[in-house]
Length: 182
Image 1 (cartoon, rainbow, N blue to C red):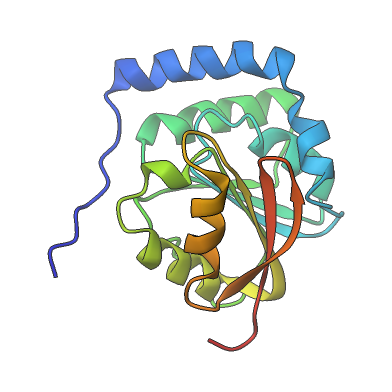
Image 2 (image 1 turned 90 degrees about the horizontal axis):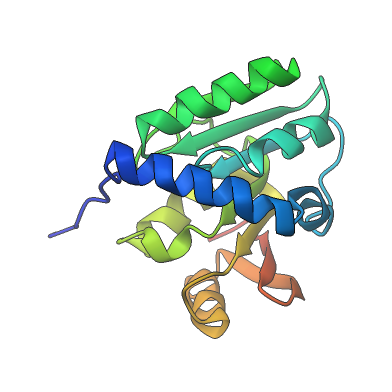
């Protein structure tokens, strides 16, 4: 199988992206968007493609001390930036993972996966969805914020193997439910 591996951006590109996200977040309230995912205290969240932590930090605040947020990104700088932001806010419920796809998390251990503005960057979307299905609890949520790709294409990709089905749509925010089987 000739799988193309995903590669991280250069350090300079990642830093520029982080600056862009900081400005973007002034106009797009991450907390308000996360409310549409229905995050609750005590849940386990995976922020896949966390970048500089725009959604990681508010998700960690929402799940509280009894919850956990795993912040996964392919770029090693993501872990450093997210860790620094977490320390600054006094958050101890964030664990960082540096990986191109494999989460390393136990089977069926995650309540909600955030895949925000990331799916278009993934070469092997089928393998990614297989890994996310494995890590997500039955009935858990895969929340995809669609950017730079057609919403209809994302729905087709996510539902293709019957692992996830669209539960609700808020414009470009799609919440899929994980099926127990498949």
